[in-house]
Image: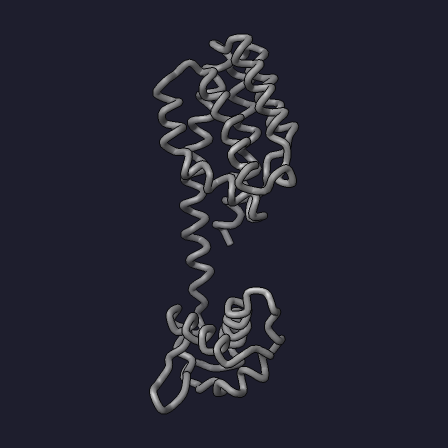
Length: 225
């Protein structure tokens, strides 16, 4: 067993204990080492061990028996199932965002004005990277850019829907920034603007589909695991 890292000790200790259980090192029904022994094995405090054990008890992997010790209750790791549930919900959100953005871009190609294009290009230039002010600021800039495309559609209902779904859309952006999903790059964003500027609705819709495709493919791959 590897000693727990200093960052986020409880989670790291819980992960170490979980690995021992899932690997079969401790069999179902077997009593695990006591608190003092785990403290030495993980190189953490007794309080951290206690919290880590509580996490695994809450997940159904361990069972604490008063006056007897802590026993392995199950070797099935529930986190994989929870990850699939989270990813499934994220895919639904991303699909909804894709449907809205594709149609908005298609209409924007037909209806955009010179002022709309100027605003899109300005917000694209300001979008920058995560390094420019951190994650929260980057997300706000990214949302502002995509909303400008929706606004250029001239469809007020779409703009209101985009505002309504901003919370869910924010979660999709956070997922790409967390490294779980690929973040569409600057050229992919620029391609949407140029497609809208071309006045070709089919090209605009295709640019957004191309923009969304890598994320949807990665979600499909993760869900298939």
